[in-house]
Length: 164
Picture 1 (spheres, helix red, strand yellow):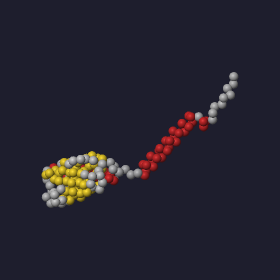
Picture 2 (spheres, helix red, strand yellow):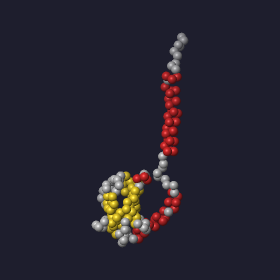
Picture 3 (cartoon, one colour):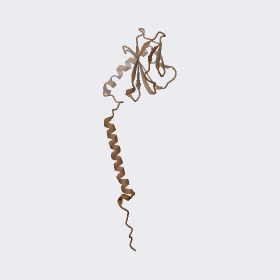
Picture 4 (cartoon, helix red, strand yellow):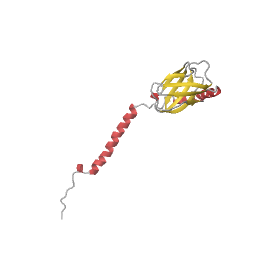
């Protein structure tokens, strides 16, 4: 007996389309990744990372200076305001302080506040936007002689004790 059944044409079968789809999808995904890699900027790596790494010892001396001066403060952060008062080691001159907020992953969200001393003894400033996520906070005097750092996850309720 003779088999008169002819197979369907190749374009009606599954396997040729499967074998064509794999490299086509790979090319499309590769083109998308190359486009993203060339058109976006990595905000996590600084150009002068080596210089900053060498300066870490100088930065540690500022932390030690804060310890030597026995500086400690209490920080209250709300959605609209930052209030800080010193528990010990308050700067004598009462000059403005700088409070820097560094986002853990997005450098474009970093900002700095100038805290001025109010009549009630608190150093205060308004926050531009509500804080969410993990932030590194750095408190400096105007002359940057010492510093205190702390890492916090926001939203955070209640006072935060800042110590070197």
